[in-house]
Amino acid sequence: MSYIIDFDISALLLLALMLFSTYYRHMVSSSAEKCFIVLLVITGATAFFDILSIMLAPMSLGVYLACMVYYALRVSIAPSYFVYLVALTDGWKIFNKLRVRVVAAGVYLLQLFLVVVVNPINGCIFDVNEYCVMTRGPLLWTCYLGAMLYFAAGTAYIFKYRNFYARNKFYCLLGIVPASLVAVVIQFFVPRLLIECFTQAVCLMFYSITLQSPEERASAELHINNREAFFEDMRLSEFNKKQHSVVLFKIKNYAARVEAVSYEAGNKITSNIANRLFELIKSEELTAVPYHFGIGSFGVVFSGEDTERIDDFAQKLSMSLADDRLRRNMTSTKLEFYECIVDIPGDIDSYASIQMMLEGYQNFLPGTDAVYRVNKVPGYKEFTLYSKLDEIINMALENDRLEVFYMPIYCVEEKRFISAEALLRLYDPVYGYINPETVVSYAEENGDIHRIGRVVFEKVCEFVSTPEFTMTGLDFIEVNLSVEQFHDRHLCEKLMLIAEKYNVDPSFINFEITEGAATEVWKEVISQTKILSDAGFAFSMDDYGQKSSNLKRLSSLPIDIVKLDKSLADDYTSPSGEVILKNTVKMLKALGVAIAAEGIENRRMEARFSELGCDYLQGYTYTKALPLNTFIKYMEEVQA
Image 1 (tube, rainbow, N blue to C red):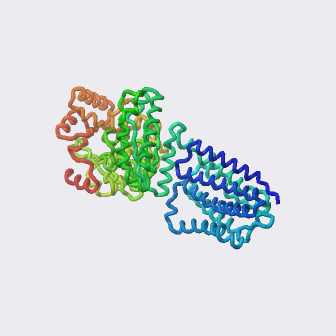
Image 2 (image 1 turned 90 degrees about the vertical axis):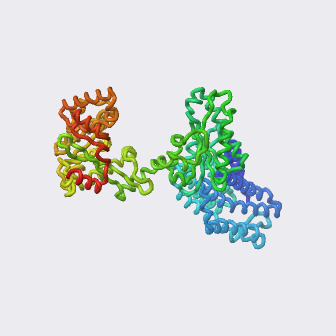
Image 3 (image 1 turned 45 degrees about the vertical axis):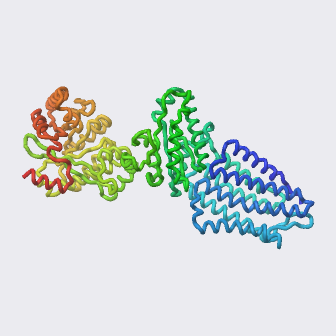
């Protein structure tokens, strides 16, 4: 039989080019890159011995040995492919299970045993006839079955990690299975057409182009992983539940100190730092992976046993970065570095938290003179709180952990508390009561303010509908409306439905809107306040005087009460502050609106603001905001 070896020769050439490209592109450091090289070498060696078994045809022993090596290599391709898939996703944890290790190794070793030990005895896999031609044995199907098992496991593994691949990469990974199957069928029925190795070589070529692309993960100049590579690796680690420790460091005021000198100086300093990292990792014999995040920011990821040495590494890195040779002849300014150590998970436990940490860790570190463990830094708790606010708010909404506190408002003329402001409070089992300004600001950004607003208003209406509210002697409750709530076209309808649900007369509700809200969504504020005002709800303008106040805009709204911003109260003793306060009150009185002053903290302020003509006073001189039950008891005492 005359065999066509052209495909095997083409496969060898193609694989040789890929090996050269791999080394030329510096694709030899990560475990995935190393596994890919192994896969290239095994496939190439398989093609070589396939050719050799044909070329040695006159020598029976030579053909037999070449065939034996060929089949030994051939049964190694599929398991190597599976290991490569695991390396791509850093999913080595899968081999921690004894059952997986036994099956994965057992199938391969059984095939190898049949080829190397059993076959020479009975020719169960292959044999060489008197014409020095290889013939198939009765158990050759075991080689195909073993390959199918590995390819099936690989396919399942790819689907498990499908969310981590772009569509083209996902289909490229899957492509080797049908392509190999077609090649096996063709070569089975046309034995002289040796295309199996060529097909695998073509598939590996697509892998090299699509999956093995260091240009996406690192710059050609620095050969260090970039920001995108870091986030990709951290997402995989989170999915694989893998633990890491990371050294993060960045140049303080990089743009002002380095890039302002020259773009070339910035590149040179960045290159020097990258080289220092590689040298230090190599000298310490670590398997740590360095990253460059851009704008003078770097990181080094440790895993496994190396994490125990991270503190020592960080100190040595700090001393290395203090070396003035980093900036010699490039900038006269001494370089200062923020540096910290983060455990993942532990200090931060989600992909979103990692992103936030990378952006802002320098903001809560005490300084640039030391290496800090972030979990020991005073500002770390606030940072982690903000990184988990989304989860905290959702849990609070789902588990009814949103509370409404009430702060009474005193009427100067009637000398009694006439109303109270409903204030949001969120209690978390871990962080306790969270700053309401932080909660509201974050909720406005992510859209949760609409749900929070409905919950607060419903709790207020529930309170107003009870006999306890009547016993307080209050005329109405003030409820804050966020600027973001006015973007909801159905806001009025939702608020009125809640009031109807609890049979609350609209006159018992006074909605507070900020002056900023009236500026940002002017048209929506005008239309929706008119609808609510016509329905019987009253309105106050909060924080008046905080920004550039606009009397024309104020007069266009159905405002009954204007609440002076606390900044006016804080500055009331200064000559200029008193002039501003007097004229502000005079103008507002001319418009016919009632005036409320916030931030009244002592009896002297109470007397002065009453004298100026303020109608309502609110502040700590009376009481702080109180939870509902405490508030009811307080009102029973003071109103009596």
